[in-house]
Length: 494
Image 1 (cartoon, rainbow, N blue to C red):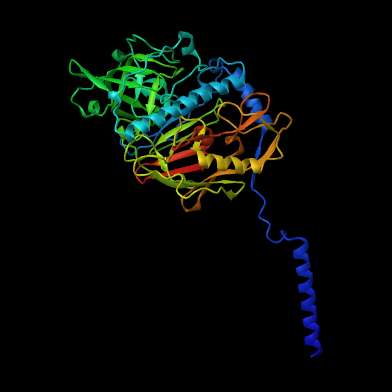
Image 2 (image 1 turned 30 degrees about the horizontal axis):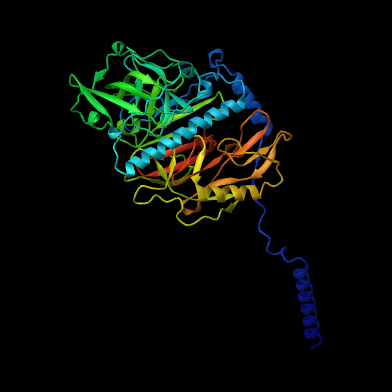
């Protein structure tokens, strides 16, 4: 009995101590785990910003070219690989101030997003492009040599790929665009052409050049076409008034050392106007029938984007499949427009904790409204306004120790990090189906907007459509499995 009484007394004593501790420290037992963080190397990113202003591609021999395959087969199952470069490694910037460079990029980016939104609105409302009247705009000649006043929308691109056109093949830098379909290149004779870094393509020097007939399926697939002497003419107009007009033809397209495809339909532009800056034309990687991916019957393609301020390069690969460590999400197709690649984004997290969002906020509805597209030509990720506000507020709540400063252009959340060499910030992640999460490096969401140390949270609000842009994709291999309708994201694969 004494032993039992003693045990009861000890238990009562321990319970009393536990109760008192719970009163004194009520949150000690229910405290949430500390937020996950990532390190932003402020010194390194500012050094890179300064470097891109003085980098001259013409005086550099550090332009790496690599191929992942040596296959010479031209079958649809072959793995084709071509080098992929940022604009800064091809065309020397005319800016002497990094903030002006950033502002010109953001202006071009906003024009592109507006054009994508307009494209979708037209498709949803059943309006065909041929029914529209072009807006007459005037681009000053001096603007053609610099992106300062750039307004390129759909045809804009910060990344170029290197492909061969014709037989024998000539190598050209082409804008990489997952948001459009029609491939085209500037051609001789040129009645009006903008500046490009390569010589203009001369069709008379190619033995594989062949006009497309007006009654062909390729011609009928164009949104805007005409007929002259039985031959198909094309026109592609962009949201800022830029355009390319010429003959619609078939040509041989070469993918470096990894093979070639005959009979690819593309525009041979004799009249072209716009601020494409250095590119010879555009490589359309969208989901429509005239895109490069559709024409070569690619079962998949992937790309990895190096930092836009880097002089390095990576690759664009066709038929390579997903890497084993990919974070995989559903690839969703719209019934209204087949160009864009929608991804099954289900949520966001900050500091390892989910951002509170309404269910289905990123869903693509039956009318074609909403959804999330992956686009290599849009720079800054746009999120549906409610989702953006929730993400920003969650990030701000965990960065109260960082000195805030005024917003810049489309950014409303910025910090003065001029006195820091590095900072630790909460992680930001995209959450896909089954709770799979893609953590972003800190430099992919907190970016310098000048060379003095001002950094901004690199997201922006959007009305309904959300877009995962190339700033958030930097350093990540994005793989689109077209056969199985999957999108894979694999970090550090450039």
